[in-house]
Image (cartoon, rainbow over all chains, first blue to last red):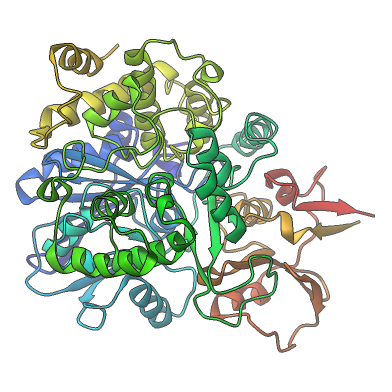
Length: 500
Length: 113
């Protein structure tokens, strides 16, 4: 059995400047060397770095029976930090991308006019996006799904904020916010790429015994730390979010929803214009919104009952919710009406946290619920998304057998993110379930394609290679908060980036 | 024995579709599965559809409904049509337990006499 059996075997290179799509085979050698996901993304980034590439990639296990195998990753130079960032995709997008026939998509240069990319049945079409340019995220997703005749089409796209190249512009997954805090929406706007839509009807071969091993791990996860909990509220409560805000949110909570094959459904739908207990299909077209981003929700809780309405507007504009929360608080927007007015300004003015004098970490909104030394360290590195908690999302560091030192804790977090994104395992699930250990992830990856020397040690090395190389490419320009700065912090940061 | 769907336990993760397909085709895909998630994403309305030998089980959140082939079904969009062309559920004949039941993380799917 080949290493690449859990990949479709194709890399798509899209030259936006020339308006041309070209396919390359994903070789066994590339998989042997990089395994997949963020490691292969980085190799492709380095190969095409002169053309300001954006790489959308899937992990080795993305879309398979492996528990929490929903993840993909977008790698690019962040217009916010100036450094390389790796943004996880955690809804259904990465799975549809892989099954559409393309494991990796490389987006090069800038188009002269708005375009959109449609991937399906191992075919790639780069089309004029004049019909959706100017539309918000929800209108765009609706239009593309209608046009392609399928509600399962997954859309990675931008709204008006990205089109105007606002540094608060984020990539959206379908209608909802993503974990992009790095302004990738602005980068897509600069490239005039409105959306990448994918629908997958392909299939992957997996080795005998893989399915049973996945079921066994899923059973352990389901009866482990997450047992009895569902949704975003328990996570935010555990992480110390304001109890009053959470009670308000809970009153509007509808059903919790899992990302592809995730044992813990961490997405929570809020009803705004409907009763939250409604079981029948709403007669209203847009009764609420799906909460997908712990940091964004926590940053907006101060708006009380108006939070849901404001976040829906943020999602439609394709704005980054955490930064919006920081700016709205700084501007003293206490009501939903005030906040919605200010959001229109953010889109129009293309503002940034740095420009507004608001608190930030290298231009990015800080994790809102903790200022612990380890959380400062992982944010200062600014490679992965700190829309995800910089700590275990339900349990404690002890549950994950992590030593007490801030540097060890930060190291654990970085390694967990990198390993997850190499394999395509959800990095939030990896912060929820100790059962999803490095050893078990390596075991599943090895079983998926009978790759015997894919060991935990190999994965760990790969993770630290990604972290080290990404950091060395960075040239990160943004500043750290003044209260963090100092020789001791700098030394910890430098030590953190050394491979163990 | 029959497959039972407790829709309110479903979280829409879709792994049951891939597990079912694995029984039919021994690969990882969803295109040949006998069951399928129907989702109206913007409304957070979702439930399972199961193609059975003689009918279709619509496991809606508000309660299950069994419909005969060719019936008009409200609310099923274009994405729901492929289920009618799939092989019916055989409860993973020859297996100890249907693969969808094994793979489900929430206990939404089970078997009953």
